[in-house]
Length: 123
Image 1 (cartoon, rainbow, N blue to C red):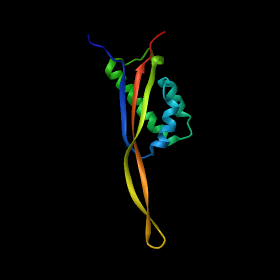
Image 2: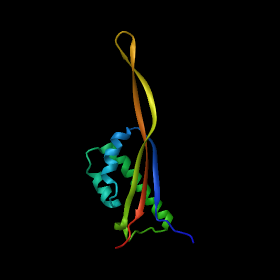
Image 3: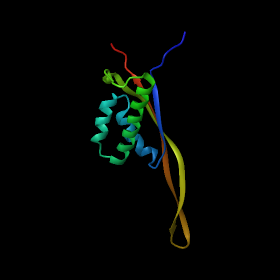
Image 4: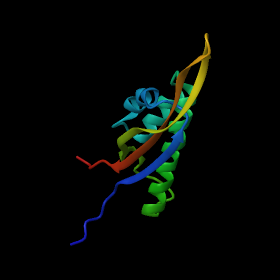
């Protein structure tokens, strides 16, 4: 018996923001309906990070339409963000000069984001 899954995923890798800052916005839109999440991102204070997450959500919607061959979403209120994971990507290591010929290491962190979209069951 073949089990059909409704889950669709999308990912962005190598985003030049630290994962800690990205998780603040990710926790804000986790388990929300996708169109509500897009509204939350529109009016968020962190504009640069919000644009990155908007790009990810539009990719999720596009993947959903391709997988289910639906170009007009009639039941769009039942799509929600099941899970968002923000993991650490590559870290660029730089040196900052300080007095007496020494240097301090600066770590410029990047992050990888994976999001999953699912369809809520009608109750």
